[in-house]
Image (cartoon, rainbow, N blue to C red; front, side, top):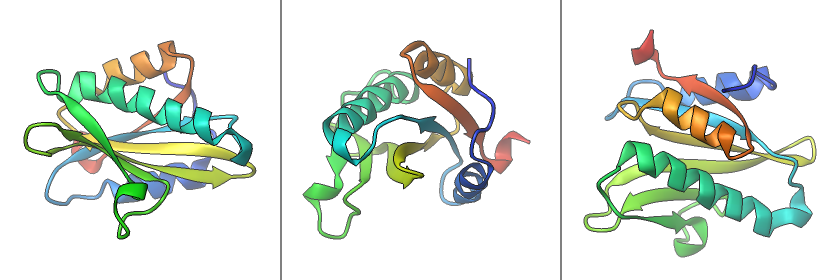
Length: 137
């Protein structure tokens, strides 16, 4: 199950990014112990968690990860999960360095099963906090 809020400021920033837009979003914050010297592990965790989200947000679609290294207008530590066939949004994340370790903040459509995603990410061994958009209130 999800952990208690560890970083209130980051939680509030993530909440603000879920404000109403074209689509309703939920999210999660994964607290890692990966520092700058663990970039390979950080990226592997990002892909693993993105795959978990995709299983719940787009279960009938094949997806791929589009990264900042693919586009000069995209942040280096920003990644998206897109459907393979029509490149539709499945999830997006940012890898943020806080106090020497990375936090990975993911966003995805609110119709995905939030509790199932949080349970699966937690079961995979990650410390995770769910963030729900204003639509959930």
